[in-house]
Amino acid sequence: MNTTLEAWAPRVLAALRIVAALLFMEHGLMKFFGFPAPMPGGTGSLPLLFKIAATLETVGPPLLILGLFTRPVAFLLSGEMAVAYFMAHAPHSFFPILNGGEPPILYCFVFLYLAFAGPGAFSLDGLRKK
Image (cartoon, rainbow, N blue to C red; front, side):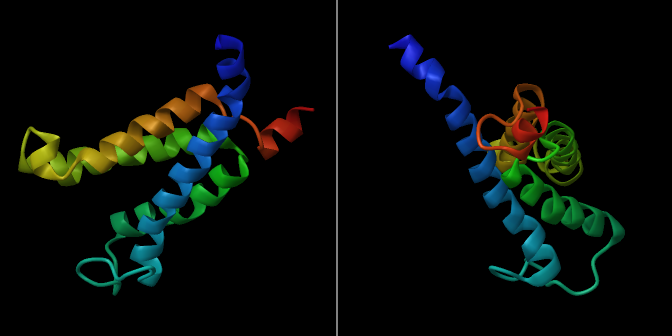
């Protein structure tokens, strides 16, 4: 049983990388393009910090989906989510369930895991190593 699970681990890691990136990309697309729905408050002129976040959230996920530069991109996105949590959520309450901070915390640690674990299977990083 353990050998079967170990054989599937790189594929499941790749699935985590791809699904997390697809879900995360929606945040950047909402900020820049109002897709799939407008960002609360509108997509007009964004403050500089929002533009930086939107750029990371729009450019980083496609790289993760392809598994290209996975470790540094995941590390940057993990840091972005840590900053987002402490700037936008933590001041409202100590408890993430009350301050709406569960998604940024979860993304932070998923991306941090990817930074250490690597891309898994089906990645351009893997092809570059060969």
